[in-house]
Length: 75
Image (cartoon, rainbow, N blue to C red; front, side, top):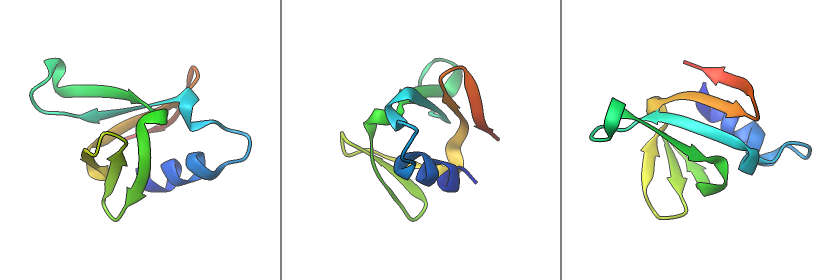
């Protein structure tokens, strides 16, 4: 599940979440997909990824997590 992967990346001593990108379904934008840097994540809550701007993204909408050129998780 995406939450487990994000949790691991947030706390991993050798991986910087800022080097990762998270793509999720976002209705209303072109292609219905939005990609953000991992540095925008404030915290994870039950069922949501809370961003530093205060917005909340449901974890079930995450479709891909990439770090560098490597896909870490894909729905």
